[in-house]
View 1: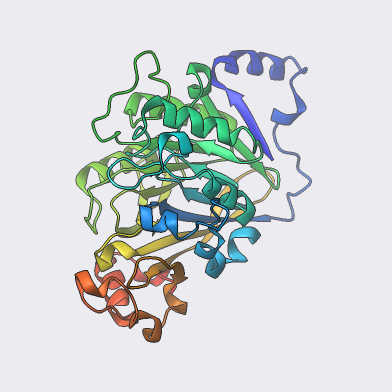
View 2: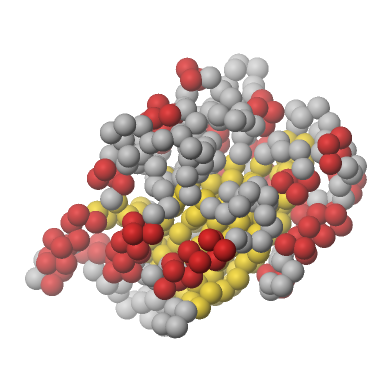
Length: 379
């Protein structure tokens, strides 16, 4: 499914196209679908934040790990999506580096195997914890993903050439450019001679990537690890950068990092460009101890492709709840619309942050979306 194009060969590609001898894969889409629009579904989850209790919840008797229990309440939506995406907050650095939770995370690569088995097409690795195990953690993660070439891995790179590669996936004939950046790495500097390892938010770099995407793809999606932790509203930097990215041609932003959900809105600029932005999906799963941090979201977006252009046909924000027991050994993730007070009574978060209920979680969603379009909420 994945088509990859290098920035450094743009000129060569253009010269081949105009001389009539270009690669057929990058020629403009055929007009066979002019009268019949293709529908493309995106299903995007927030940060997969694996504290040690979450890691241990998947441990099996033979010492391996398996995490399908975290995703089974969200199936078959994940497998049915044309593009299923998850933010993998933590690295798969290998057992030799020691599995660990906060503050320096390292997770079993068995989680990666679970992501493959659950049907994820795109995994986001640009996060503030990506250098927790230094270059070895990133390089071991990349080594793991080489076994699964059909999965598009964003945000981390094997080389400078890899960093200068824009990932474009082809779905039902539409070319979707996928970008992924993080605001930083918790103060951990990039290893010497390996500044290419992680995609950091740099406006000049993003502008260059957007220009390439505009010329070579039908639709551009940017996955941003950004924002102020624990803020339920976007900060001024997020809003300013989003406005710039709209001007630069990005069509959809999906954000994470703050550990809480933030609202959704459309942005338009003076050039007539419009862009949908999910400021933060929060955590997909975690063992955080505040109820608000256990409320996440899923971006459920439907695109329409008419053979020439891609546009957003429909979208919603699906709140989800991380549920764990009082011993922090059993973890599940539920759509809020399927959660119940009978489950909430046994939630382990009560010991630290008081009893939770469906109404308490809904009130948090409503507070987050105050002043924004709440009709997009699917609960």
